[in-house]
Image: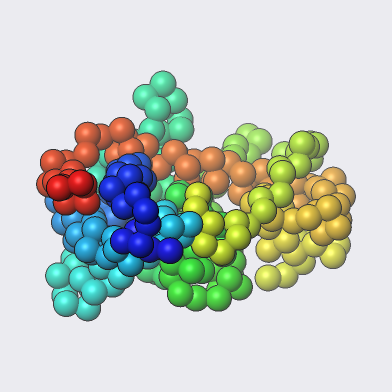
Length: 211
Length: 79
């Protein structure tokens, strides 16, 4: 059922308005990582929103709106790159401070997050996109596969390789890859400890189900 | 994607950390977490995942620019 076919079209448009509004902060963050420049990022989001609003009448109720919006934004970014309007080559120092931000009361965490942001910036684009979607935005493999139009196995593989690259680059940066090694000795490993409770299995949403 | 210990691969540890393994496939990984290498890998990935979720937190709390809100108004204009 499309919005235009509903008996309460206005209410549905308000619902869609609210749903899109809710996702704008995440869309801005994703775009900020890809564009690195805040103004460029918001231009990309602006174009994506324009397309989304323009396609409102064809939007099907029950669609995963978050994945739908990110798909539109991904296409906008891709087209921008093809048109040569995207300029990803900047210095690491130019990464927006907002990306590197984290709770001010955790100075160690700030260092890690800052290094992590810089390391992400060096990833190949295809790895970076998967890492941002799954690692930062919390999409399931299946949702990221739909957004990027690639098989689920490709998402899993790219995420695996992206995580490995991050660990290596952070190590090369001279910082612990996410955990402290005893006495700073390379290769020293902490004693194993129980990692329970095991995280609950994340059940993929049904296709088309709205988050 | 080599075995990190025993029959468990580094990819399986990632799936475990991502919470994607069911009981049948999760138990072998859990068992292997007694192995220091697998435990270290899981701990590292969890820490990394936690830090990733913190990235850009400030952006999420920024006011939404008016030019973006204006576009949304078209949805309900005249409604």
